[in-house]
Length: 257
View 1 (cartoon, rainbow, N blue to C red):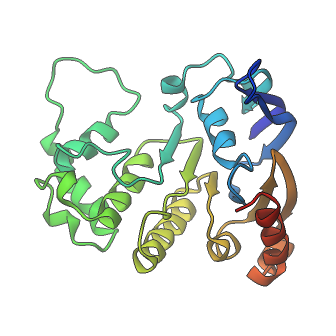
View 2: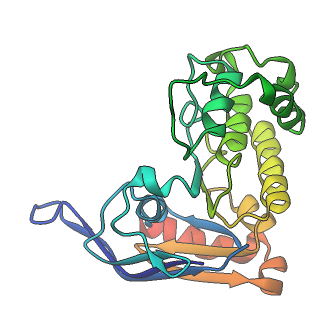
C-alpha cells in the first residue's frame, strides 16, 4: 500500500511567488489498484507523482510504501521498485542506443554493474517475445536505434522497459498526451493489458477524461492540491464522461484554463 500522510509542499517559500500547493494532503492507494487521476493545470497531479518518486522534496508529512517511510530515500533508490513512463516519448529511453541495448539496461535495473558485457545474448529471444506482445513488429528491429522509432513505438518500448523488473508501483505521467489519438488508444490498451497481466499497482495522470473513465479501478479528480472527487468499485464502473465533465469544466474555468 502507498500512503501519503499530511503532505505539505510550498513552492518558492519566502518570495513574492510563494505558493502552498499541498497542506496536510492525504492519499492511500491499495495494492492492485489502478488509479486514474485528472484535474486542471496546477491542480497538483504531477507534483504528487514527483513527491512519490522523490523528484521533489516535501516540507512535512510522510510517504510510505508497505508501511515503511521512504522519505529519506533518494529518487534512484525508489526507482528500484517504481516504474515511470513520462509524457515525452523521448524520456525513459536512450535515443542513441539500440532497442536491444535499451532493453538490456532496463533488464539490469537495480542490479550491481560490473565489467561484464551489458547485453546478454541469452536474453535476446526473451526480448523478442516481449516485443512481439506489443504487436508493432519491433521484435525484428532489435538493432535499430530508439531515436529512429516513432513516438508511439518509443512509448510502447518505454512502457515495456518500465515494467520488466518486479515493481511495487507503475507511475504513468500523462504518457499518451504527446501521441496522436489512434496511437494513444493503442498505448492505453497496452497499458491496461500490462497492468492486468502483471497485477501491478498503478497511478495514471491524464487529461483525457475518456481514458480516466474507461480504464482503472479508481478515479480521482484534483483541484488546487485537494482531492475533490474519489470513486471506485461499482461506482467507478458506472461512471461516464458526462458525469464528471461539469465538475472538471467548472474547475478548469475557475483556474483560467
